[in-house]
Length: 321
Image (cartoon, rainbow, N blue to C red; front, side):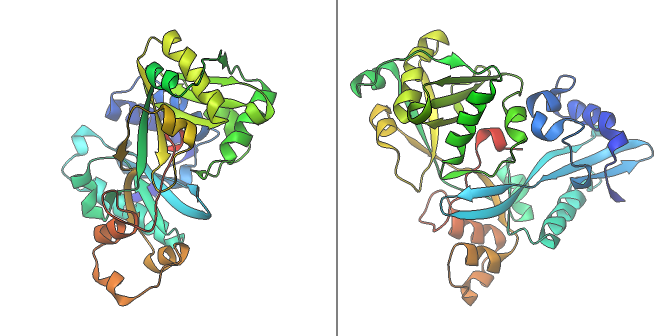
């Protein structure tokens, strides 16, 4: 029987997920405190099947309101998908995913996104989609584009710096709509390195997770961000850093000039939950031909990575679930 989790089951849920994902103790609240600490966990959106006093399978729905260029779109995420080894082969995950999909539809959510194996989730109507351009930046590229290295400072929880980060983040064309209380929690996540430089109009920041060569988030003046990269490549002893942009918009000139190339990537796996509402959000006519397509085909035609498509869905690395 499917039920929602209870607050008094928080520790049991953490141990279950750690075992399923082979993660360290308290991995989830340490790496995503904005949604996985006891006080930030929405237990009503954690769906479970239990057998006796043990969790057999679990799925969580994460509400995501996205600013996608000139539109705001609700596109809820699916995450923490796990089944205990002893409970596999019983259809629990299929049951929970279908329940989560029905839950989102009942809440009038038009789209959903998740990250995982295409063949596993296409069965549930999801398809690989979204367009993200990835640009590598090296010291040679920075030198060719004439951007000098500048010293980067480390964010250490200063309120005035966080205010500037928030302003820069909210100026982006594609981002999740965050609540004010989430900002300090997001940047407290373990293994995040948050760098910044400048003030006011020349302020810039970038975030790197652990030893990754991909920039998890960045914002503010492009020249400031790229100038910090020039210094950080030496400090972090890496050859390049990768920046990601919505591929349906022009790449800002300083990043385009500094990039040593680019590649196209999907944003995740997207499912259309409410076709008429999605077409309305994209200002597209709702002709009958759409209804003859399968759900994955609808996603590909609306948000496809490889062909022409009218829409795009992008979720930043710090907001994936």
